Length: 204
Picture (cartoon, one colour):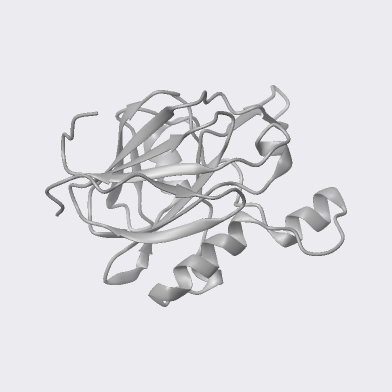
């Protein structure tokens, strides 16, 4: 466990990174410019069969929008993160990370398009993790509205410049984090994401 905060690190637009997080440490994810989504996925360090589960997390919270006090669970029902201080108050698991195939199917894009899925699996490759092991991400700062008819609509992220959310690690983790590459998720522009690893109960 760290005894001092790490320096704040910046994920450039349309890119990603991966890192380890020890039980008890706090991952603070900040939107430095506003209206920028970040995708998070995680595995238990030392047991890659244990990974973040959208289904377990939604099921046990009994709601689709998650914030302070809610727990993000693994596929084996063990807690992975507890959400701490949250300046935005709304995050979800409703959509999978954007991918090359998504841009082709939904937007008829031709040629390569940066994507969260590609950025996640290329970052996690250093830890021996394969693309097919990555599931639905925790969509930080994203705004997905669900209509009465069940239709989903991606809207402008509610995060303002400097807003952040803190995720308390409940086990040793391998994490991957992105600055989302989808135009529609980020109000038409691509911006960076900042993150830092803090010791328990670190002052702001």
